Amino acid sequence: MTASSTTIAPAVEDRPATDRAVPRPERRRGLRTHSPLSPWLLMAPALLAAIAFVLFPFLNTIVLSFTDAQPLVGGSFIGLQNYRDLLADPMFWVALRNCLLYVVGAVPPLVVLPLLLAMLVRKAVPGIGAIRTAVYTPVIASVVVTGLIWTWILDSRGLVNSVMSSLGVISSPIPFLTDEYLLLVSSVIVTVWQGLGYYMVVYLAVLANVPTSLHEAAMMDGASPVRRFFTVTLPAMRTTMLLIGVISSLAAFRVFSEIFVLSGGTGGPGGRSSSLVMLIRESGTGLSGRLGYSSAISIVLFLLTVLLMIANLRLSSRKES
Image (cartoon, rainbow, N blue to C red; front, top):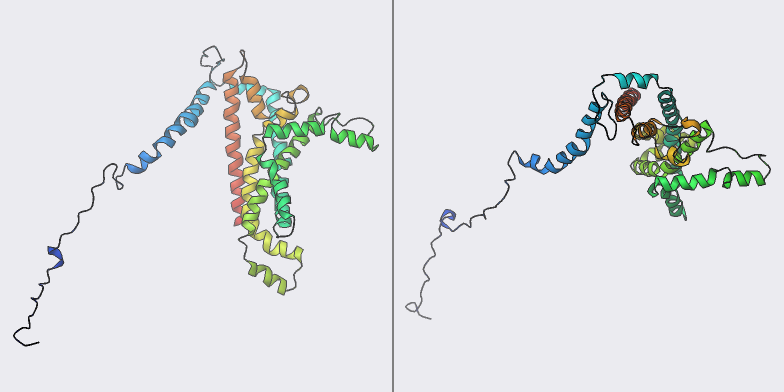
């Protein structure tokens, strides 16, 4: 190749990046994501549902509590007369007593027993999955179905009385479902039985997050399993136990289905095992129902529930401090 035949390719001029064609971003249509109204528009369906199904009925209940309204008759304003009648009604105090007894009877087992069950079933051993399933099954069952099962078990001719009678333990059937206080005890048993599995799962989730190093350190110090439970596991469960106590106490104070199903809708002998929610239903239903009086009981139940929640939260904060 000669020098004359050698050609040099012309140098390509480097253009600045600003001169190159830059693709324009596609213009988005619709709602601007940075609009200040975007969060409110997204929450609008839930807010409208809450206003329609929570706030409006609550305000309407407050208004009705000051009237003598009936299901088919528009009521007139009567002031605080419904609340005065409520305080003078002996059945209101019976129902309030039953709710308080229900809280005392149901909450401690719902706090303690699920924790013990969680400690027993948390280890991976053969057959433990079947036990977990058996304990959790009542949670997914309907309260009505559960109540009917226990009605068959606790009836005067049911399973418990039949077995005890055949063994010679009792001479006459035990009135589990017809005695004023035994009906409450039976309802508490149903509530605890149905809530064990749910709270057991809550405890299992918290136990899985407890550092194993704490248990290993306690074992190296020679701590027994019981001592490890009280020094390592129980302190880690304290907040969860308080939370379960608050939730279960609020649910127990508003009990309805268990007593209603076990008593066949009567609330026990003379209605003396009724709860406040059952009293609301009995006084506000039917063509001659007193909607105003029933609304007054509902407002009082709401205020008592709020007070119970505040008391539980303050007690929890004191224990935490």
